[in-house]
Length: 482
Image 1 (cartoon, rainbow, N blue to C red):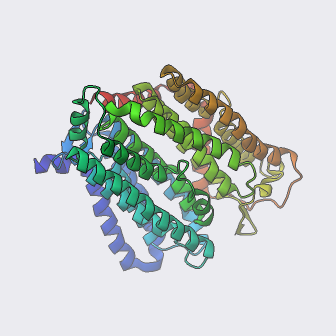
Image 2 (image 1 turned 45 degrees about the vertical axis):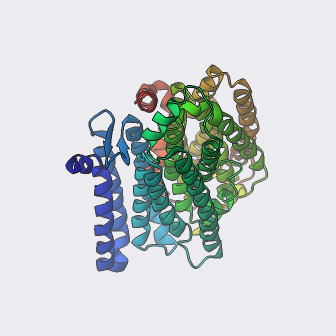
Image 3 (image 1 turned 135 degrees about the vertical axis):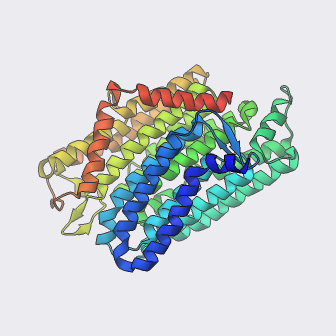
């Protein structure tokens, strides 16, 4: 049994062992080790992705049911690992220029990703919390990694204080669930709740579920637990912001889906209204609050809140189609964010980073290829066909309509229309405003590579969508049908 468990958790073991070895390598080689350690971290992430991908199909449990591997875990883990690898590659030039070139940075991102992997495969409230905290503790540190700047220190402190609050809510909810259900195992909870045969669960269990959802909503930065997002996105070093916007977001949304559909699937009528409210509030606030932003990182923070709302529309549907739509949406969201942050990381004038939206003025004339790529991402985030973002919204709204959530789908479309304003405003500034000081050339090859791949995927997704759609359908079916 132990050998079987170790085999199932092999990608996580590889990541943990590699992290410890890279720590020793960094200590041994000191200052010159950062770039080497960073590329080795990228290699470890890609190797872990391959190990996850080639694992035998089907559902297996390890360590007495604490850990589960299934097609759902495979889909979300591969997406998280690729997102983390992309964020790591994009950070290399920045950390060297901004005196952040310390080997601990890539190792911390590796351990944060390891926590995400454990979260995604959690099959018990206890293992869920362990994975969540391993991710969070590493992210608190990288948010405050530039100790010489007040903004970064403030971002780390805010994230830590509010993260501790969310962890407390999640633990309180878990303790209530354990107290009223007598188990923390997802399988045990699913069996217990399915045995109610339509009867109402105890009030304490429902209250525990509400606290659990609140804790998870904080991790995905959904309204009304979003308050940390704009400040942390703006204050953190830009590569860290890019990482926040990609890998942890996917992992937390994946965990959200596993918790609600797995153990609490039979209580869909109880949690559907909560998730619907969170989705609507996130879409509405993200659409409206971003309009007045002048800092592009803050704008992307509000954009991420709105996009989490769109993804949760799929989860609120409570069907395999809805869950599949949520996974498709998050996969496309990661690609759009990777390309957008590759451009934000290239916003340098005379060797100094700039973050103002007005700094993009005239980019269509000074850097036409960069402007064209950013226009593609903005149109896609606005949901304009035939770009990838349109199809992401199509799948989640279609699932909501099929589940009878007509008002949520209509409100989502209206929020998309409002949100399109600030995306199209960026395009207007790039192409119709008078040029400002041009950005430094050349663009680093790591950023150019991520930008090119992202732009091609977003632009040409409609030609070959089947692999992603089939993978998401298989993943969703694994969660609903075991």
